Amino acid sequence: MLNIVLFGPPGAGKGTQSEKLIEKYDLIHLSTGDLFRKHLGEGTELGKLARKYMDEGRLVPDEVVIGMVEDKIKETKDGNGFIFDGFPRTVAQASALDKVLEDLGLKISGMIALDVPEDILKERIRERGKTSGRVDDQDDSKIETRIKVYLDETLPVAGFYDNQSKLTKIHGVGTIDEIFNNIAKVIDQY
Ligand code: AMP
Figure 1: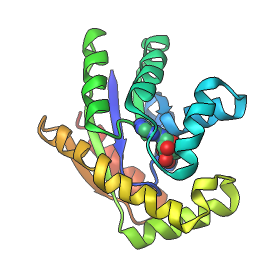
Figure 2 (figure 1 turned 60 degrees about the horizontal axis):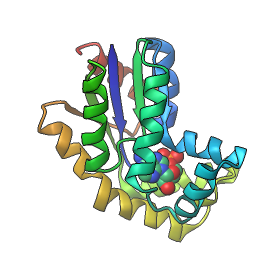
Figure 3 (figure 1 turned 30 degrees about the vertical axis):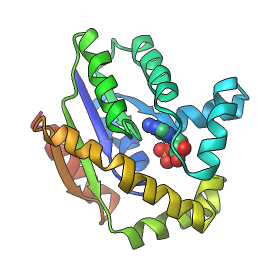
Figure 4 (figure 1 turned 90 degrees about the vertical axis):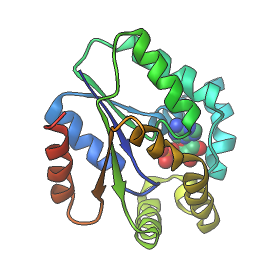
């Protein structure tokens, strides 16, 4: 199985690249942001709880995220593998994911980290905000908060996978296809 963590700050292109990767490698796209937005749309208790964090650009508490991901993995563990998009976002989430996978006899194949300068990230998120309908894409202070949360809480997750010699960085600026081809070259080595 291929289990890939697609990593990067908000606006790095994780969602766009995930869509192409799931098609090429026949993987399951596990985006915690998308799962939360689905709960929100359906008005579930989990959605209501997540909303107050999401609207502010802060992280939903680890135990909530981990429980949701664990359920999803157990429900669908028989495919070719997963692309984890927007997860893990803290070192505690990364450790918990290792444990859940280990219990199922699975492991992370590697982390691919998309590298994009901050000014381009902000520009991309504002552009997406014009059509995404996402509150957290439309307000400069929320965009700032999300980037700060990424730098403070999420960036250490790259170190977690680097310690396991599983980190590859990819330049995340260029055409969608150029970036996709560079990611595919890495995955083909797993
Ligand atoms: P995203 O679509 O990945 O940008 O996620 C949107 C929002 O959902 C984030 O700003 C967080 O509030 C929440 N979220 C998504 N994934 C996670 C996660 N792994 N841990 C905590 N919060 C998350």
